[in-house]
Structures are given as structure tokens and as C-alpha cells.
Length: 114
Length: 111
Image (cartoon, rainbow over all chains, first blue to last red; front, side, top):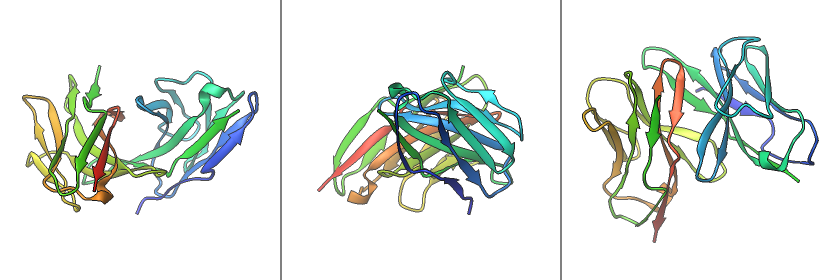
């Protein structure tokens, strides 16, 4: 089974702090994604990456950056956290193969910015 | 642009009753279709998917969905729900290398 691990499940940070959310996958997938999930808004794509050291902006990249130094690891960075970034963050990876593409999610990271 | 609509944000239903969660999509290219389920405090898990072939697809826990190309729909159904089906359900499309998710439908199964 594919395993997508988000190292922090629950975080509380202060406004202005720098925040790192780490995601690791064990299936050698090229494609990795960061979403945020908010009530009534569903999942919104922040950034994605198709390869090491490669990144593309999603729908809501403002206030975020990412890092992909190794294939298995995709980090989301909040340079200066703000209260409107309080949310659930989901990391995902996409595989391919005979059964087609499927997106696999981590358990999620709940971030509260106070 | 591609988009996914789930018209029902919340669906309450009594245990053992049937349920249908609606999903419509808009796309100018061929897509794959998915339903994901999210239980409280967890990430999303794949429920079922349509890639090609038979338009009716089934999951192992009794859900089914039917792809209707003319109506661009992929509604999710279950003939008899359980308390354990209480969760949020997301419809999604995949095209190229991108996924687009609907806003979700919260299914609440009442005793």
C-alpha cells in the first residue's frame, strides 16, 4: 500500500512564525501536491511538484512556498504565518500504472495560527 | 476550465435508508472520475473510480456510482446506509496530471 506520511498532525503557531509542514511518500511517485481544506470550500490546491527541485503554483499559492529536494519529500512552508492560514493541510501523491492514476492522501495536518 | 459541482453540502438520512450524493462535472477533455471519503480527523481515502468500461462501478462497502456522459454526472448511491457511513464525500475528476475536487457533501446517518 502507498503510504503518505505527514509528520505533524496538530500544530499551534503564533502569527508571524515560520512554519514547516513535512510530507514523505514511500512509492517513488513523481507527482506530489499540497492542498488546504476549509469548510464549504473543499480542497484547494496550493502547490504541486512533478519532479525533484521542480514546483508549480496551484490555485492559492500566496503566502506559501514549497521545497522538493528529494523525490520522496515535499515540504510546505509558511514564511510568516497568519490567522487566515488556520486550516487543515493535506499532502497527496499521484501514482500511475495499469489501473490508471489515483491520488493518495496523507492523514492531514491541522494548523492553528493564533 | 474543468470544474466539479456537488449541489448538496449536507445530507442527513436515517440508518438503513437509501442515499444518493450528486456530482456533476464540466470538462472539455476526457476525464477520469473518482469518489473519495473522509472520516472525521482523517485524510481522504479512495472509495471508487471510473476509468473506462462499464459505467457502473462499485466499492467494497456497498456504494456504487454510475457515469453518465450525456448528463456529465457521476452520482454516488447506497441502497442502505449504516451509522459508520457518516463522513464527508468528495467527487473528483482527473485530467492530464491534475485533480479537481468538488466542495464535498457531508453525509450524516441518523439512528
